[in-house]
Image (cartoon, rainbow, N blue to C red):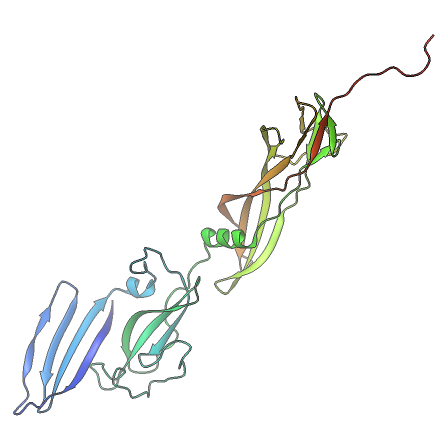
Length: 290
């Protein structure tokens, strides 16, 4: 357990006459213990609250009123007289009234700040008295999670694929038109929470939109002629359709060259539309026949 003095001694100037007096200790359900005493010209009020190590080690919590969970990428202990980015060099010797509000005369009050990984904004998390300038806070750095990597993948964007056909641009009704696309794994290295993260996203399924309202899903990208792995026969002639393919990626990542981890969720990217004219073949006689 770590004892945090959230409110130290408040020095208030009062015109009290006579000897000092003492108020009894009061403890509530909050786990805080309060006491007060006075001298001939002041009243001192003190409060000590007990907070678990877990609460201090994991100060990120739901932002009040929003329900959103904050994830912090950086932590700082700063004098209560300072704010992050404003006066980070303020040291233990700072003599401001708020900093001197600790119960022990040789201690100063510091505030723990966390930096939101999404907004970059600093949030005050807790406060504690120290007898010397505190080191970097002993708070675990947030872990690079699959959800965080997935959000980065969505921000970067994955490649779109073009549906290609053979014949190209024009085909025949009731004819096996070949469909295929050119697919390759997507790789990238990004920095998340100050650490290098390698990402590999590979196509795992393809949804072919033929342009006439029908679709087909395959696990392979097909191939050009002479392959007939993926084909489709159009039933209506004298029309132009706009075929396309949506590709679904599965991704994995590793942090600092460590073990690979699966994202667990897929990302589907909609491909651009092409143009394919459907024609009808007609037989005709040519040449001389005896």
